[in-house]
Image (cartoon, rainbow, N blue to C red):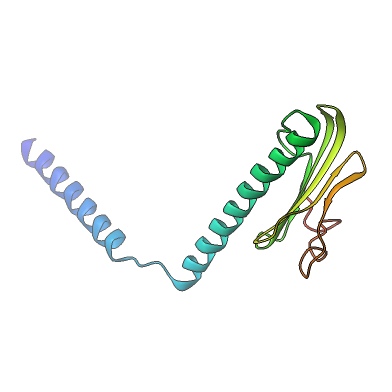
Length: 133
């Protein structure tokens, strides 16, 4: 009985060793590196947009908006966020954040508070593009 238990233990250790060798020698491909960078950029862009836009909306209406009702993004250069419902003194807020430019559009209940014109501010309008509800 001890002999069979020892054989099972040796087999288990062998399988674990092979697994560690395979994992240790596997390298990340260039495509996986690019995908990782893309995901990281999209995550940073989304976080920045949500943080900056929420702060700007709070400054205008006196209450922080939480999860946007709608969002659109190309995941590389712009994010468009829309909140609908009761947000402080407003019922709707729209904010467009463009990488390296900051907030380029802030609209509260149809009233434009911020609107910056530039080379990349109109391309990412978010209307009908990659909308997530």
